[in-house]
Amino acid sequence: MKLTIIIGSVREGRYGPRIARWFTGRAAEYDRFDIDVLDLADVELPPALPPNGTALRDVAARSAPQRALAGRLAAADAFVVVTPEYNHSFPAALKHLIDWHFTEWQAKPVGFVSYGSRGGGLRAIEQLRPIFAELHAVTVRDSVSIDRHSERFDEDGVLSDPERPHTAARVLLDQLTWWASALHEARATQPYPEGPTRPPAVLRRQ
Image (cartoon, rainbow, N blue to C red; front, side, top):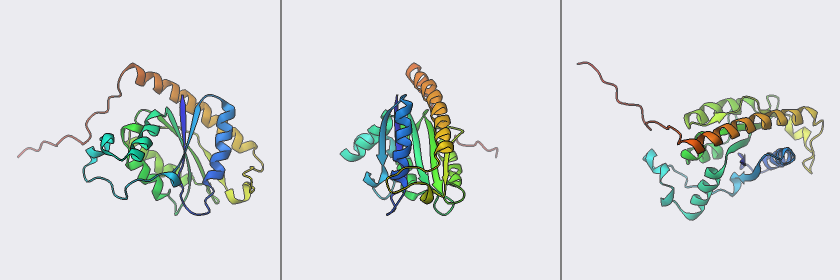
C-alpha cells in the first residue's frame, strides 16, 4: 500500500519538513507502506477554486502539474498530514490542497502529526477532522502531537526525548494500517457509494 505524507505548512522558517523527516523515518522502519512525501511548498494550484464544484471532478481539464498532483493523491491508500497550529487552526495552503480535490480522499484513512507550542497543534487536528469527514475520508482516532517543537528538534532534525513520540507514531501507524487495509480491500471489491453531491430538494407543503 502507498502512504502519502503531506507537509502542510509553506511558511518561511517552517518546522514541517524537519518533523516530516522524523515521521517518515518511523514509517520507513515500520515497513508496511511505500512512502510518498508531498511538500505543499512544491505544489502550484490556481488561487481560486472553480465556480462550480462539479468542475473539481474534471481532472483531465487541469494543467499537467495539477493532473500529476491529483494522480499522486489518487494513488495513495492512506494519508498522514503534518500540520502546525496557526491561530488555533491549520495553514491556508493545506485547506487549498484539500478543497481542490474530491474523489482522491474518498474511502481512505487520514492520520495526523501536529506540532505547536503548549497545545502541540491539537486544535488544528480537531478542525481538520470534520473537513475530511465531509470528503468521505476516515480520520484515525490517535494522532502524534509534539508540543514545544522548536525545543525538541535540533538542527539536524534529531528529536530529543523520543520515547513518547515514537510510541505515539507506532500507534498511529498500527491504526492507519488497519484502516488502509480494510478500505483498500473494500474499494477493490465495489465502488464507494458516494451518493448525491448536493442535499436533495426539500418538498414543502403549500
